[in-house]
Image (cartoon, rainbow, N blue to C red; front, top):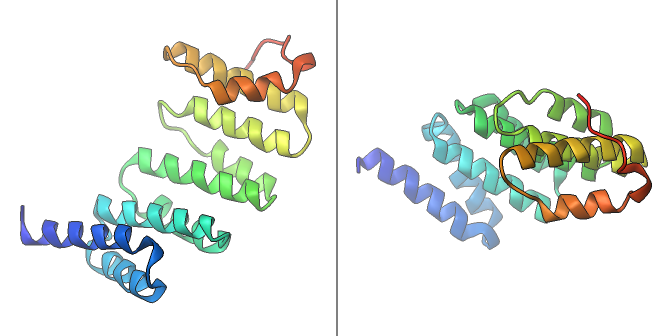
Length: 171
């Protein structure tokens, strides 16, 4: 490994290990990662870690900042999609439903439609819009089935609305 790559990995590892440590030290390491290695996947991973830590501490503004950074700087579309989905969940937690929907609506990456639809269902469920929630939950379930997968949590979400599960999903 090159010295540069070793340095990136070292900073990333220290960030992970300092998850419960000194916040100032973690901020310094993140700043170094931003300044020296912002174009690498390690910077993206560091931002995902920071967002997770911020959500754990109920610091949603910082979580959104970290996820926005990923959406603006990541070169990999999957990273951007994951950041958008996570940001939508943070916005859902803060009851910013229209912003959350806008974030998931903007995702156009193959392989993420089931997660997009499930997240939309969660947003509608949180607003008490059960018909819309079930519509998207059923679409998500159909996407999972197309991939030969199942999602027990999604099945439980659908089961919460027994009167609405008779409809078939549509686009």
